[in-house]
Image (cartoon, rainbow, N blue to C red; front, side):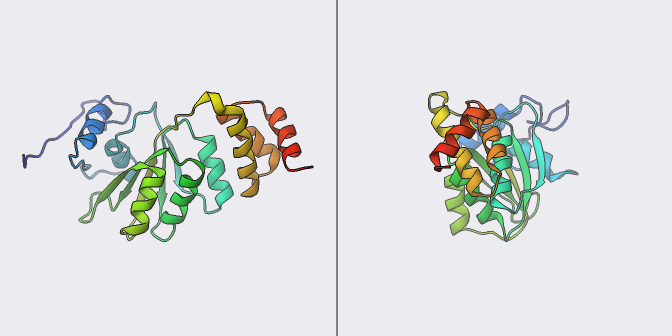
Length: 201
């Protein structure tokens, strides 16, 4: 009680291609505050304390401003650890898109890393969005999204619905069907035909 414990890796940053992620996740589950030692990159600092496992990660820079582009990125990288920057004026809107299309995806939003007002909020996209809506959104953010676990039983119906959602957000239908088929199941041609039928074309 009241002690500080350091996790040090001799192979690089803890939890970045390192088994330290298990200790970080266990600490979060136990309610222990996890902070990163200041380093050269907010990306690696965020990944090291997020507590999500993955074989590497994809860094997307700043999240796309357009809802359709963001949905396409989320679909393209749904089975990967995805890391991105976001600014204070857009963090709630961006998390709202994540919560809308991938509500059960686990997210860690890291605010003001290694600074006085550092904060890490973890949970499902819906839970994190609720926290941010009621909480502090000043400062700079690093968003870490865990790989999405999907249920294969509902893949065809989910794929069609997702393709139509992507199209509604501005993604061309053929591209939307290709993304949905790749990430959620089905074939792009069959999805395209089903999407045309669903919208009465």
